[in-house]
Amino acid sequence: DADVTQTPRNRITKTGKRIMLECSQTKGHDRMYWYRQDPGLGLQLIYYSFDVKDINKGEISDGYSVSRQAQAKFSLSLESAIPNQTALYFCATSDGFGTGELFFGEGSRLTVL
Amino acid sequence: GQQVMQIPQYQHVQEGEDFTTYCNSSTTLSNIQWYKQRPGGHPVFLIQLVKSGEVKKQKRLTFQFGEAKKNSSLHITATQTTDVGTYFCAGPMDSSYKLIFGSGTRLLVRP
Image (cartoon, rainbow over all chains, first blue to last red; front, top):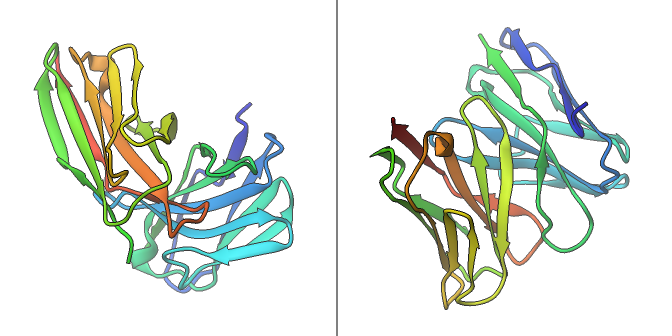
């Protein structure tokens, strides 16, 4: 089983719908991240959490919210999805020592019609 | 704001040719990381460079961190079809622990 698991892997929805992407990890890491990937734009940080009580905005947080339900779980919500939020979303984790390597989930492909 | 830029955006090579991707930051970085993303896959960590002028090798891959710690490069010697993918560099944002990723270089290898 994957150390960082994302659900759903693929989702098609309509404009205005609420969507939640979930991430769970078995690596025991404190730090969790949500990134968005668009073709040719690399990975952009949406939100990150360094522990259960710590939530921080990244580069592109507008239109998104997150919840850290437990050390192992970090979910990303789109309260009212819009077409330009169509993208590939990655959850990642890292340990608590400096700028540690990121361990990515398999990704969640979201299409907003 | 802080930016991390990568060139080229694409590189199409014949198998056996060398390949280099370059990463440049608008600010000095405490360290730089490199990731590889295979087509349809997720980014996978390759290496982290910390010291000014550092050079590290992994088989056919050579990673360099510039003396000013504002640029880095990844060189692949004698590319193979297994090298296909997108290579990203990433550096800490604003002296924090958040990583900013470059836009990536997509490598295609003709067999």
